[in-house]
Image 1 (cartoon, one colour):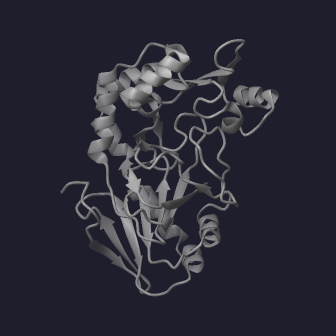
Image 2 (cartoon, helix red, strand yellow; image 1 turned 45 degrees about the vertical axis):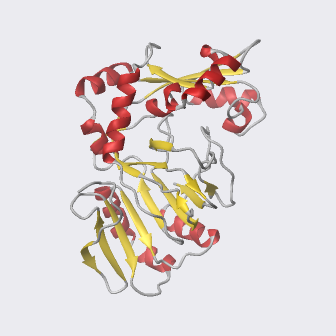
Image 3 (cartoon, helix red, strand yellow; image 1 turned 180 degrees about the vertical axis):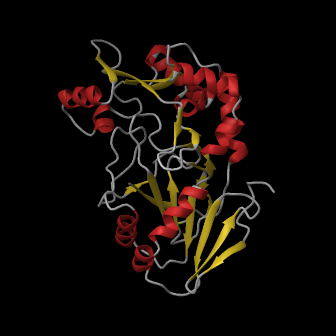
Length: 329
């Protein structure tokens, strides 16, 4: 069965108030938990925390449907049952707006663009354990949030490629030029250069304030794979394929190089010894994600909970209004 098929139900559990299905039906994938009657989602989450935790560790993700959550404040309360201390979105890589109470918009990229599959904040040395999405308004067309199991992605990547990356690490280089991509003030959520330097020092990021060209350059050497803290399973966990300039379309690459020069691109990734990552290697990694991709159509009120280490996520292009909120914990 293709992972690209839409939800196929294969009932595995039936409680009095919810039905639980594997998705896709014949493979270890995300679970769909569907409310059979009107339930109090907050009370249900409190009563079923073990069920949620255990299935997240096994399947990587849960999709909750028909749970009577109709507002951001209800989603906020629900999220805090799953993760009592929600996280601020710090050291940003994409534009997002706060919706209050540590709830954010999903990445605000143009609707016609895809966002490649990735684990949240895998380009840094700290990341959320869980990420939760709430569908307030599904897009008229497209706008799916595809997911992929990071354990299976790793298994698809050539062992020699994995070894080379693990030996060298991934180096993320960011250049902050006024008016190009995110400003350092937005990324670090401060106007104070000393605060930026302090953050960089605490997170082993090399930072350089420049007299000419970009205002700030940062370099950070990060992990390639990771062992899940509880299951001890090994996963592919980095954003080399997403940060690399080749993830952009050719016209945008040419425009950026013309504007700032190849050395001053707003973001790029390299092997840890600063040598270039071969484009065929990056395409092989993208193909591994593609082959493990699972997609489903959002419905209003849906909540998706992902173990951020076990499961990558992305976004498909869309048309019409789309409102998906996100919480991290």
